[in-house]
Length: 382
Image (cartoon, rainbow, N blue to C red; front, side, top):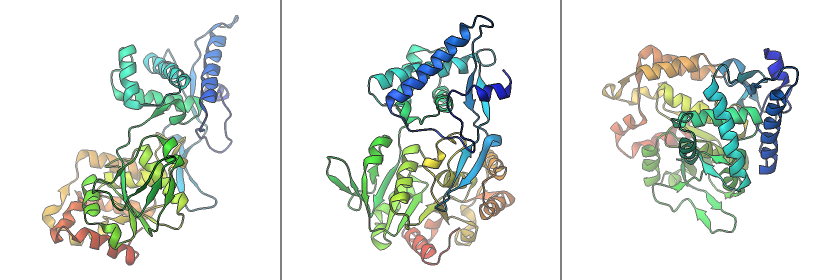
């Protein structure tokens, strides 16, 4: 099938400017799956030229990715345009069949009114179809393919990702029909963020904080929580304990929408991975380009940055690893990296070094809170 015909064969309407995944009720998702099945059967039963039809998916690659800016705010996000790729039985039979297997499972899950984690779905598919799902990556890829085909969010499919995130500080969560949770009186581990976006969307949020600080690492998060930074600097601390999961990005976006005048700062390692993590919070990701606008926030880079390197002893620097250089190359080739971030990344590559936030402990374990407060007060962020 020619590329133009693949695009024309999209099951659902194409936005003239950008593509997005809709939040749909279970009956609507099941109806879209039924349409996909009927189209497949119609092509197979065609009297003139019976064929196994290809699956038209929104292409998830850098060539089909751009950056959109909000009309009413200063939030920019990754989006995908309506360029299509395809899954076919001839070119990649296993990937083609995985899409149908995931749609079949989603149809059953939604019919039963359930919501399952991606990991649960993997073990179920591994049990039912071991020839096609030998690792979690196969499931994750197939889910994104279904999202691209049906143009609905992952949660709409009845699937949610496990959340590693936590938050603490000047925030009170009011859960429906439950007691409120005062996040300022919790232990250093903070409040665990649920992976259920439906529950997160129903939370009522109240806060007297002036800042939100996104922390890359759980160890740094717990250090700041143990020091009760939010009592000295009125803030909310949040972490995904590494690369951001959807639930952590979702609750951060909700905070930004609920408290639009509360700036969001990122505290990450001075290395390519740290910058990639911050950019995911700020813009979203290409792999989830159909949903990125739902989670993007105007995140400012607090630290660590090149100007902070003078605070770190030479012995604390580490040589960039091949994986660091690979991430740096990918970021430098991206369309959305702003110039100040590009300059920082270029400096990392030129020096061939990286530095962890923990290097600041050379000034004492209580220095990190002072470092954060000073940079915010002085407006030292980009």
